[in-house]
Image (cartoon, rainbow, N blue to C red; front, side):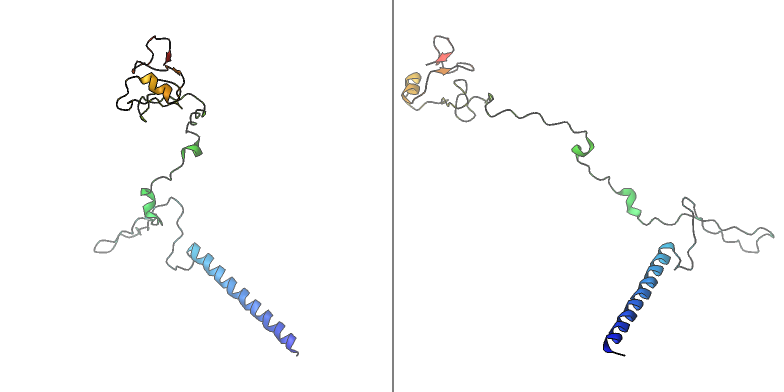
Length: 172
């Protein structure tokens, strides 16, 4: 017998041995899953209940009245399952969440509270900052605005600084 024939026969032997071991493992796993490995295991239909076998009282039981063993349900494999909370499902997954309102465009008019950022937004548009408090010593607010390059401003809110004395809607 050549060395190649010996190697082939060893390989075939190892494959056969692995196949036998695999069959044993699979049969053992299938048997234990069905309870075949437990000699005391009793097949119980789903929903059946098992009750403990009554113990006869002191003395012999009555003739012809053999007590039938009753069965109770097998213990649950997951006793904590009853107390588990339901899984959280995102609102969009169930279709019950309302769509978000549209976001205003960046050029849309924005209403800002007066003096939130130190600017009086009653005048001009959102890009113009008329100071709520002018620098100390300024008596002519319109003159100060013109000297700092402010164009004539539209009054968009209330004229709280009285920059529109003629009430035509244009400050300074």
